[in-house]
Length: 464
Image 1 (cartoon, rainbow, N blue to C red):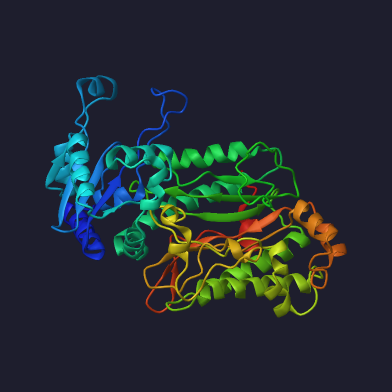
Image 2: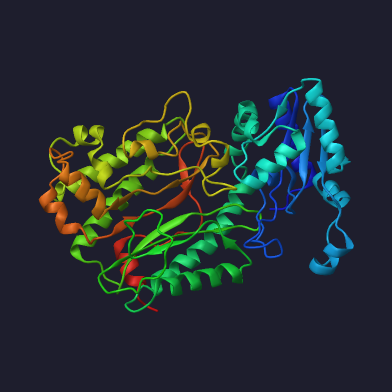
């Protein structure tokens, strides 16, 4: 994706037109020390800052005057010391020209402009800081104490950015697909390596090798575990044993930060047991039907509930659930097995724009967040629109601690057959995830196909 200055100018103009009054301050990310200042973590730019500038260096700010449509870039030019230690550095002037920003301000000049606006009681639109470094930067530039920054966050700015970033252009979708095709190669390698005696970290290492061979980074901390019942399991220390299930949730982000997010579940040794196949096919049926239902105007919350019904029906057929399925799903009994949402928005962030507010991104006037266990974790529930990119990732998990807690409380006993469920306490978990774009009439699975039927996986896995 080769964005030009004109692209960034258009994005900024659209944002200023939408906000209309006052001014906007956006800050880049800063280098964060791993354990001392000279040893920082790898730098990753703030997604919103990148969206409006294309700039990938730390410690710069974008100031937008919505009253007169002026854009200004603020920061410091590199010093000779920077060049000595880090090589040639691009100047502030060159960054501004590349982004189509006509004005340059030093940090001191930017602070003076903001101080003057504050004295004149002009609106200054800020985004919520997701790190202490951002909070302190905003406090320094605005003169507001850190404790006051939260009360000065702009709802209008957040909504305006979400409205703009939610609908992906053809170039953005292509960028996501570029990342997805590398992620597919990673998952293929993970399936091949799902054999007895291999350590989880060895699989992660090979996936990372594929990412780095394409000069890319993981979009998030990889989940690669035979304990897939732990939803965000970032530990990779287990040795694979035959008969286990390996759940791998991994994706890279493109050179322009666009994420991919794929999950596949593979039997260690290459063959599903009857029990594993039965559960897997329920999850796959829920995923495929959910993808089929995606179209503009439908609420994702309704697709989630339909998936919950498919899962509950399948589990009843296996004797794990009982009673009236519609009543069971309405009560939330299925959530013991499927405790998370069906998916989330995706783009420059793997959970797109979550830093701006999950409810603002995933909900609208047609649906509000539930407080019911399971449903409360829906990241995306709103009506879908063409250009939305999202994940579809149902799962079934047997979480021993949760099962034992509910059983001890006799919770949902009219819908859950605990005697049967207890036979699955060491089962683990299964999740299947793909990335989808909403089209004008339906949806499309992004990227090259990644193996996911039981037969395809058995034909491919364990060949390492």
